[in-house]
Structures are given as C-alpha cells and as structure tokens.
Length: 261
Image 1 (cartoon, one colour):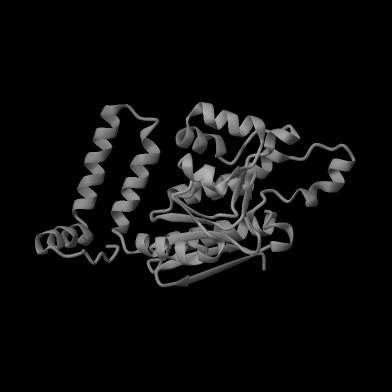
Image 2: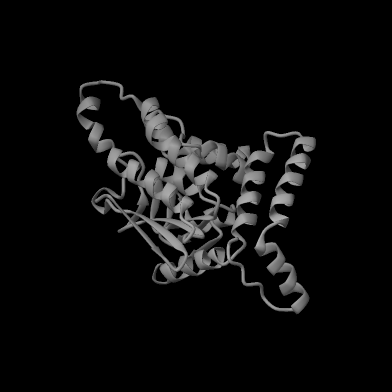
C-alpha cells in the first residue's frame, strides 16, 4: 500500500507511504489520499486530520520517474489533466474538511507536496523540513493552489521571490515567515505534532468548521456579504452544545470540555 490511514484518540492520521521515492504522488497514492481525507472528514470519531509522510520526506510532489519514458521521447505530459483528476480534488477536500487539518511536515515538501502542506490549516515542522517550490527550474508554474496560499500567507513580494527562484526554504525561515506554527528538533517532532493535533481535537469542532469556511471565503466577498455570512454562521455556532459548555465553563471558571457537537 502507498498510504496508511489510522484513527486513534480522535485523530485521523494519513501517512503518505512511498519512502523509496520520497512519498512522490502517483495515481494510486493520490486516490488513496483523497479517499482517506474524505473518510476522516465524515467520521465523527475524528476531530482533527493529520497529514504526514514516512521516511525522510513529507512528499516530493509528482512522481516524475513514472513520466520518464515520455519525456525522453520529447512528449509533453498531460499535466493539466493530472491536476484536475488528482491534485485539485485533494486540495479542495483539505480546505473544505469540517474539522482542523494539520500537516506534520517531517522532511522535504516539494512541488505538489508543498501545496498539500500549504492547503492544511496548521503546520508543525521538523527542523529537517524544507519547502521547495522548484517548478520554475523545470519551466513550470506552481500549482495545486500553492500561489493562492502563499500570496495570502506571505504577500506578493515574498511569494514571488520564493517561486521565481525555486530555492528551498528551510524550516526556521518558513516559521519566521509564518508558514509553520512550530519547528521542533527531529527527535521531538512526533511528540510535538501529536500534542498540537490533540489540542485541536479537543476544541469546538463546529466552530472550527464555521470559522474555516468564513476565513477561506472572505477574500472573494464584499464586507456586506461577509457580515451576512457571519450572521448565519454565528446562529449555527450558537446552537451547538459546545457553545453552551464553553459559556458554562466560563461562568464556572474552569476549562471547557468540548464534545465536538
């Protein structure tokens, strides 16, 4: 199998598992990743989704080795079709999942692998992690939403600098720029991402989902549209058991015990 999916302690952990090719995506792994994310998104046992990689890499992106024969013959690959069929559905699944999604970036995240990490709501990285948008070095453009996310995280100038050079961005600089929430030593990495994921899984899931939808939709709306959407979202959030628990805990001067309802 090219992917492992496990549910435990309210976490749905998706592990990209092709370490011999740095967890590069092929058709099988792309389909399995989409299925796993969709399953986790709809599973009430899961209150935080985690994406990580096995071995030395998070993901090196597209498996160019599978396209080698065609390239050697001078044939142009159907890259647009690959985006439509494989990557874009995965990016949409990550951003629309009604619960937090955390990328545990254990090593290099390159190409579409970087895009997958950027599409997650939270990112915890090992000190060994590198973000590589090297599309330009092979005459391509960043895809799978990378530019959309980077422009919002970094601003146009830094996003352009990163993408036009194609040079790796090390973990400390990525954290300084706000891409990673946390960078930890390699031997503390799993403990750190599990702790952060567990914190998210203990939160008010419905409020997370509504906030996520409002945030991702805000850039394309007028203020009036956003205000109207906030009315609908707040009405929905106010009807949850977690909201009642949160206010009761405030009155009782204790930590809330959210149930994700």
